[in-house]
Picture 1: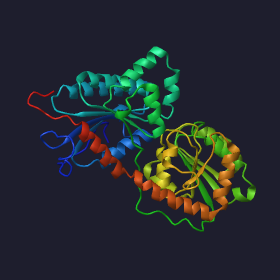
Picture 2: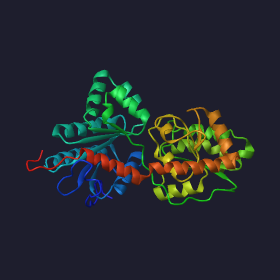
Picture 3: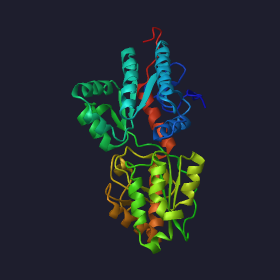
Picture 4: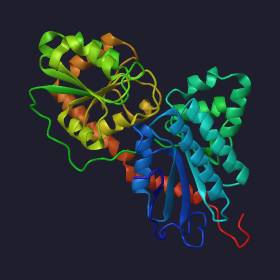
Length: 384
C-alpha cells in the first residue's frame, strides 16, 4: 500500500437537508495526515479504520507524515507531506484537513502543518492521541508552551479520546470547549467469538508496546508470584514491539508458562485473541488503547488501570478488574481471581463484548462523516 491512500467516493443522499451544504459534486473531500498506514501502533490502526468505514460521500486521501525507517527517511517523509499539503492548498477546490498527532516531536511537526492550513483559511481538525501529552506539555518552556497552545487553537474541531483528555485540553491548552469533540477510538467487532468455557488452561494476553509504561514488567512479576497451582493452570502471552528482549529475560525463570512474541500482524493478533481468556494491560499512562477495545470486542475480560481515557470505556467489576498502576500485589490478586473463577471470567467477557458494540468502526465513521459535513466548505465561482 502506498503512503497515500485514496478512498473512492460515491454520492451523498440521506442527510443533505439537515447538515451543511455539500460541494457541487455532493462529496466531502478530506486530506488526512498522520503516520503511514503501515506504521505499527494505535494511531495507524485508527486511521485505517477511518479509511475503511467512511460512507461513500466522503472522499479521503491519506498522506503519511511518518514512516518506519532511519531518521533521514522519516524527515524525508515529513518534508514530502509538507509539499503535498502546500500543493493541495493551491487548488480552489473545497477540502477539510484532518491531522492526527501524539506527543513530543509528533506535536511539533503537526503544528507546522496546522499553521499552513490555518494561513490558507481551510477547515482544520486536530485529533489528539498522545498518552503522555500532558507530561510533555507541562515540561515545555513557557514560551514554547504558549506557541503550542496557539497552534492547537487553530482547529475548528479538536477531537480527544476521552472526557479526561477533553478537560485537560480545555483547561491547560485553552481549547474552546465548544470546539472539542470526544470520540473514543473505533474497533471492529467480530461477528462471532470462540466458546471459552471449560478450557483447561487460562491464557492471559497482553498486546502493544512492551515496557514500563504499559506495565509489562509488573505483569511478569505479578504472574511469577501466583500460587503454583494457579500458575500451572495459566499461561501468559505477550505480543508487541518495544522492550521485547527485556520482557523475555525477566520471564526466563517461568519457562514455557510465559511466551513473548515480537510484533504480529492483524491476522495473528485475532488468532491470539481467540485463543486467550483474559486480557491484561496494567498501563501507567494511556489515551484509549486500541488493544483494550479489541480485546473487549473479542469477548475478553480485562485487567487494566483507571488511567487516561480507560474509565470512559471500561467499568470495574463489569468488564473485568481495575488495578492501581504499578501495584504488583493488586495485579497478582486480579490475575488469581480471573484464573480461579470461571463464571466471573466468562460473564465479564460477555458484558465486555456487548459494551464494545458502541465503539464499532461503522458507528464511529458515520459520526466523523457528520462532523466533516458540518464544517464542509462550499465551492463558489470565486473559490475561497
